[in-house]
Amino acid sequence: ICVHFLLSIFFFLLKPETAAVLKRTVEALMERGAIVRNLENLGERSLPYKISKHKERHRRGGYFLIDLEAPPSIVSTMMDHLGRDIDVIRRGFIKHPVSKTEECSGIIPVNYEDKLIAKKK
Image 1 (cartoon, rainbow, N blue to C red):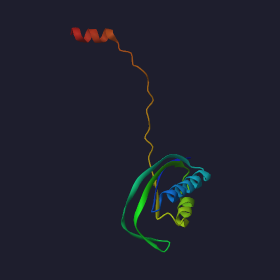
Image 2: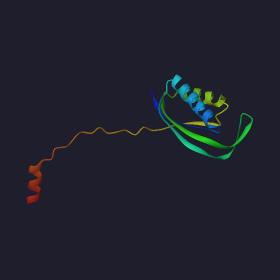
Image 3: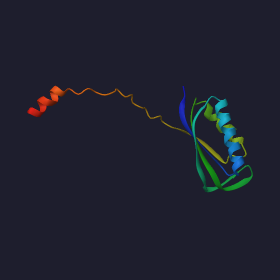
Image 4: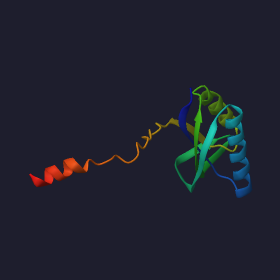
C-alpha cells in the first residue's frame, strides 16, 4: 500500500551542489520504491532559528518540497539516509491526504416534459 507524502528538506549550497543533492535524494527515494510526483523549490530563506548540523551553524537554507507516493516503511530509512547526508540541514516527511477526484457521469439528460409542466403551473 502506498501513502502520499511531502518531503521537505533544506540546505544551503551553491547552485551546482544543490542540483547534486536533489538528484541524490530523488535517486535514493526511487531506489526504495517511491514515485516522485513533483519537486518544488521554495527558495532560499532565513531559518527560523540557528541550526547546528555536522559541526556547522546555519542561518539560511534552501527549502524544497518533494511530492511523492511511497510505502510507509520508506520513511525511517530515508530519514536515516538524509540524516547522514552532510548537505541536508533538516528533513521531514508529512503524510498528505490525496484528494479524491469524482468521475464525471457525463451529461445528465433533462426531462423537458417535466420542465414544461412545471412552468405551466
